[in-house]
Image (cartoon, rainbow over all chains, first blue to last red; front, side, top):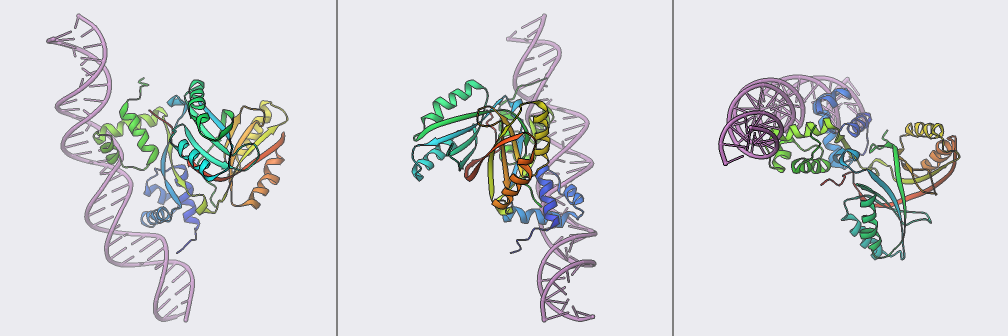
Length: 156
Length: 156
DNA sequence: TAATTTTAAGCAATATTATTCTTTATTAAG
DNA sequence: CTTAATAAAGAATAATATTGCTTAAAATTA
């Protein structure tokens, strides 16, 4: 099992992180390799799980999703049951983009949430988040702007 | 200028947010439309800016990026110059995936950072972050796990 | 409601692109 | 060096995207 990532693989990954719909021919040209070995490398990295998948990134503002927030959540008990129940419930809410279990004294979970407006946020908070068992504290930070926003991981 | 998003567009966006490399034929089939109007809709939404782009999502763990952190940053002065300088500097660091200007008393900025290990994190903190002009406080929360992690915005 | 206009879908032909197989080259080990 | 293994290149075929044209559906007006 060759777990080595050479310079060609790195270049492929960098390109695909920027343009996930680049044609194999263009990709091959960009990394100075012919199409067939280029495609083989891509497929191998997909199978290895290095590439999780391909997605379209949408423009939140143009879709009317103007309010983003990071929400710190504190729990009463730190039991696996509490955590699992919370995670399952949150996973069913499409406005929750991310949920992270974090270290630190101020919160147990950190959520990234996106909604239409402040009214929708209020609905989310009152009707969804604060109704989850075990949630004792909620601290919201609204996003005013996001000068850096990338899905590209630092490779190489 | 038709700013209306109908049910076909919604279905297209939902599909593309899950599989950005789906073929136009498969996409057309999925939304029950023939390939040519399907492609036309996709192109239109790309031009309108509803679709920002397409990217490959990589597996951080398999790339050896095992440590993710959210970092709250406090600034001495809240002047545009300070903010711009910080943002420009941060944008040059590939380990910084996101940078958000946020509301709240605990921090001015919230960063999402990914690095190889704790040693790399220390290097980032000491050699990069804390050396930026105006940074008075830094509070780190490490990510233990991320049960929810999607780039798909709630459409429709 | 009927006629008209507008808008979008369907169809078919062409151009691109992906994919596979075979051959050739490069690299590593003995 | 020679041999074996690995990967790249090339060429042929299959799949897909793309375009222009025709037809249908929807919306508007009289």
